[in-house]
Image (cartoon, rainbow, N blue to C red; front, side):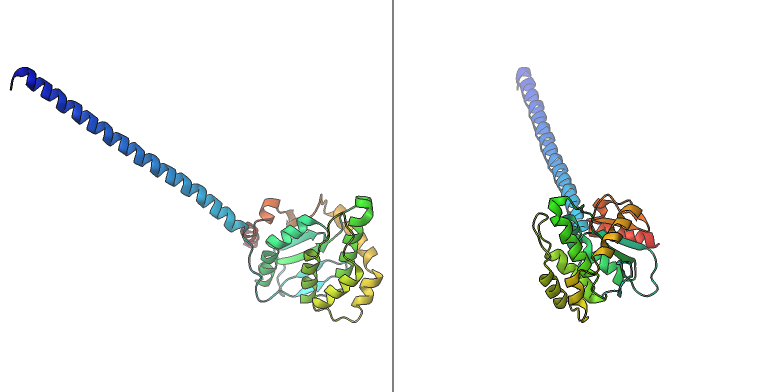
Length: 254
């Protein structure tokens, strides 16, 4: 083989080696890029998974903590001897956001009480002024809350509480009719012979309205729902994420 031929052959080998090296580098970059993409997608997926987990509602346990209606209309749900931490729930039966919170985090709240991990205090109040929707919205709220005060306590109270949110009318329509409230109470297990008369006469309405004003002013509430843990307002994002809410309460109990 002549000199020229040998040089050409060497150049061909070098070119072939370079081409092969470039192909290896391209394949490496392609694999690396795909791996990064998979990792990124996995991270995003994990983020969504954790978000979904923290927003997933719990199942209500088989047992409830004892439920007692206080003289002022607040309702305590706690096992005997449990005094801390105190998780307060400020809610309005006519408030759509309160209904959403109850559907999302309500099971967690009552499970924490049943587990003896918190003393839960419900504060049913009316936040709507008289002029809201010609007074319709406020009247609905007061009727429902006054009726809830007619329930002596125990499991029927929380069952009636849940039924009120389930049957919540539109904010612009008249609802919570007296006959319905009486029927729902009986279906919730209320056996007190004075329940129907109490609901019909709305004898608890004035006390409820007074309590609402006291709570709104004293607690400096800007609206409902509001959760407070040992007197400190719980961030609304935490309130609507059951897993985060549970962890926040558990941390407060340490």
